[in-house]
Length: 119
Ligand SMILES: [Zn+2]
Ligand SMILES: [Zn+2]
Image (cartoon, rainbow, N blue to C red):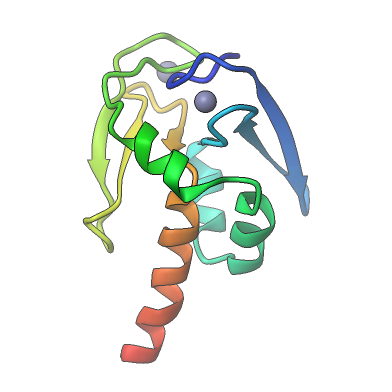
């Protein structure tokens, strides 16, 4: 499998029985659909996994939006996160997974964390 944004390979990062693919170059993360919903409230996971990623690099790659699913090569579509619409990520229309740039997962998780205090 190759990174849809920079064509580098992925490494597998595992935690608590869940395996996430992380790009060796841009540190983008490839989530299976159920993994993302399982992990989106897991702050420790976000920090642990994404420590390696540089948000500046993530922002650069976030501008690349015309990408193909690393599994089936379909055009991925952009999605705005329902709770945090400033976060845009790409998902496979066939449901293979979602690609998050470095820093986006941390953003997703931490914003959720702070939102709890506002309620
Ligand atoms: Zn990459
Ligand atoms: Zn696909």
